[in-house]
Length: 64
Image (cartoon, rainbow, N blue to C red; front, side, top):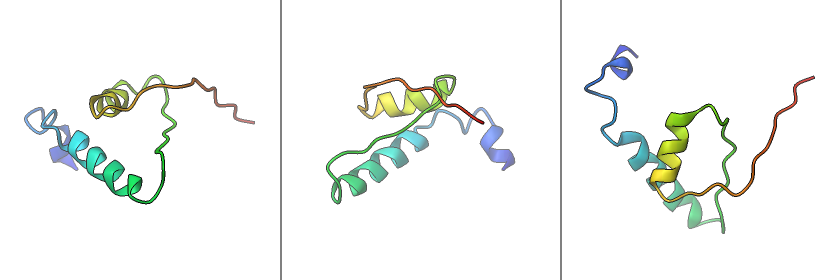
C-alpha cells in the first residue's frame, strides 16, 4: 500500500491502461459503459477522459 503513495509510481499510466482494458472487455459484452463519478474526483475524471470517455450528464447524490 505504501508504494501507491510514492511519486515515482504515480502517473505511469497504469490506471489508464487498466481502465482501457476493462472497457474493451466490457464492450465485447454490452453496447455501452457508464460511470458515475464524483465531480471532486479529478484524478479519476482525468483517467476516464484520457481513454476517450466523455461527460454526458451531471447528477447529484442525496443521502437520507
